[in-house]
Amino acid sequence: MNNPTGHGGSRSRKQKGESRICGNFALSTLLAVPLALASLAAGATAQAAGPVVARISRSLTVNDEGHLHLVGESGAYLIEEGRVSGTLVGRVRVSFDVGTSVSASFVLYPNGGGSLTGHGVGKLRSSGRYASFGGSMSVSSGTGRFSHASGQGGLYGTILREGSFPVVVQTRGTLRY
Image (cartoon, rainbow, N blue to C red; front, side):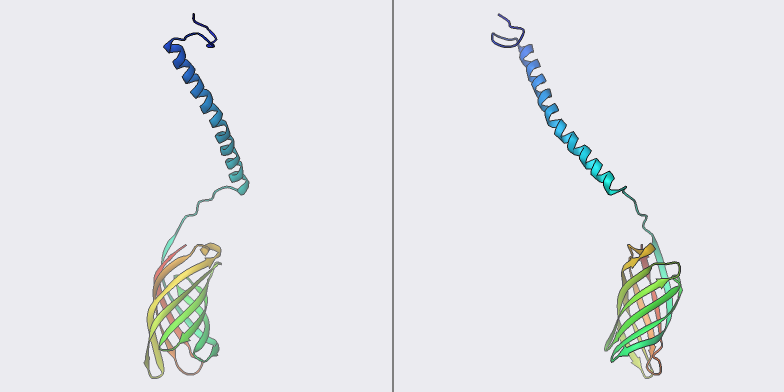
């Protein structure tokens, strides 16, 4: 005898299949509820953290020249400051370590705000009163509008080895921010 409640007795294939489908549907619904709640909670957390903001990356070909003057020294270390002209007009402060090579760390303050920080290395060539250097430089960080800055390029310059040790520095490269 066929029992409509599905308890006891025999059932047709159709009834067994329907029961399996209904059971699978019920199980998947029970599993979906916690997943949906977790998804809603994650969305609420993301909204609480604030909106996601996309940042447009810019690339700039830089060709700058700085005319620097000595503001401090200690042995082979020179601290120089001065005006920068070219692509990024502003002021710069550079710490040079002058030996058989030149290494430098700098902070550039372009007009309009923000700053760029980096370092450079170069081979020193000497010819009497003047020493020249050439090598590479990189930008490692920045602030303000340059907060995600990075870049690399060439570093060239001359140092007058008397008086106030004036330095002329040229940089050419690519800046991304």
